[in-house]
Length: 434
Ligand code: NAP
Image (cartoon, rainbow, N blue to C red):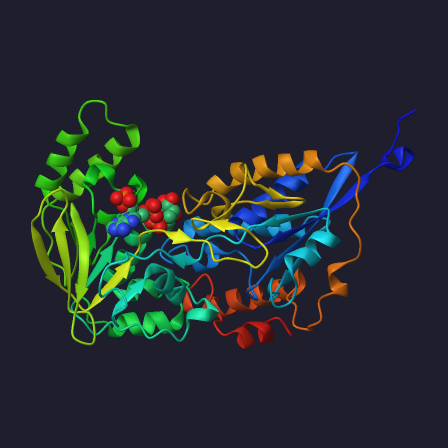
C-alpha cells in the first residue's frame, strides 16, 4: 500500500514572514519552497514597504542593463507558488511591528537590504551639488521616494567618487548620450533631466590604484561599446598597477586590469561626452561658495594635493542598512550569527552581510540561512493571521501587483520600452485598482 500525504496526516505547515521584497527576500522564499517536502511545508507572507516588489531589480539595477533584470521572472515564479502571499505598501514600524510578526509567524526573516549611502566624512560633503548614489540611483529608477529630488545637472563636469560597480553605473548614466535611454525603463523625469544636462565630463575617482578597483570586468568590458562617449584611462596608471600587482595576481584582478588596459590602449575617440578614470586620489575636501565648485584630492600615499573643478559630486562608496525598530544594528548591518538574530528572527542579504556581491550571491546566502531556520522549527506554533492586524485598505497583493506590472509593460510597449514605470505611490496604487 502506498501512503499518501493524507494517510500520513502529519504534514507540518509552518508560516514564515519575509520582510523586504528584493532579491534576498525572494531567494529566501525560494529556498523555503525547496525545503518543503512530505513532512513539512512553508507558507510565506512577503511584506514590502513600497507598492512594488523586486527591490534593487526595480530600483537599483541600471536601466541600460536589462539582462540583469530578467531575474524578475524567477521572482514571479516564486510568487505564484502555492502558499505565497504578497503584502506590499505595508511598512514595518508604522503598519506593524517586528514583535507582532514574531508572535504570528513561526519565523521572521529580515531582507531589507542597505539603502543608506555611506558618507565620506570630509568638509563640504553637505554642500548643494554633493549627493550620494543612494539618492541618484533610485531617482533615475523611478523610486517613489526620490521623484522630487532636485538633481542639478546644469554643470559641465561631474565627479563620481568610488571605484565599484555602483560608481560605474552612475558615471555611465551621466556620460551616456541620453537618447540611448529612450528604449529603457529609466524614469521619464530622469530622461527629461538628462536630455537637458550640461554635463560633458565625468571623472570616476578611485582612492587606490587600479589593481584594487572593485569594478567587475564584464562592466569594464562593455565600456568600449558606448557609442557616444569617450572612455579615458591613462595607460601609465594601468602599467603601474600591473607592476604593483606582481606575478601572483588574482584572476579577477588580472581580468580587470586586462579590461582597463584594452580601454587605455584604444585609439582616442572625439565624442561630445567623456568619462575619465582617475586612480590614487583620496578626496579630502569639497569646496564651493553656496554649492560645489571643486573637489580637493590628496595623491594617495603622498603629501601632494590637487583640485578638480566640478559642479556635481556623487559619492558611490558603499551602503549601510537603514535601522528598523526592535532590530539590533552594528556597523550598518543587522547583528547576526550566520543569519540568526534572536528567537525566531533571521536576516538575509545585504542587511545580513553588508553591501557586497551580485544579485545571484543572495541565492546561496539565503539558502544557507533558510536551512538553519528550517532546522530550528519543530512544531508549528504560529497564531493568528497578518490580516487581523493590518488595518489599511491599500495593501498591494500579488494580484494588484500583477495588474500594476501589466499596466506598466503595456504603457512601455508603444514606446519600445520594456515598461514605462509609474512613479508616484498614488499612481501605482491606481494602476493596481486600489
Ligand atoms: P563596492 O563594490 O564595495 O565599491 C565601493 C567603492 O568605494 C570601492 O572602490 C571603495 O574603495 C570606495 N570607497 C569606500 N570608502 C571610500 C572612501 N571613504 N573614500 C573613497 N572611496 C571609498 O560597492 P558598490 O559599488 O556600492 O557596489 C555594491 C555591490 O553591488 C558590489 O558587490 C557590486 O559589485 C554590486 N553591484 C553590481 C553591479 C553589476 O553587477 N552590474 C552593479 C552595481 C552594483 P576601497 O576599495 O579603497 O575601499
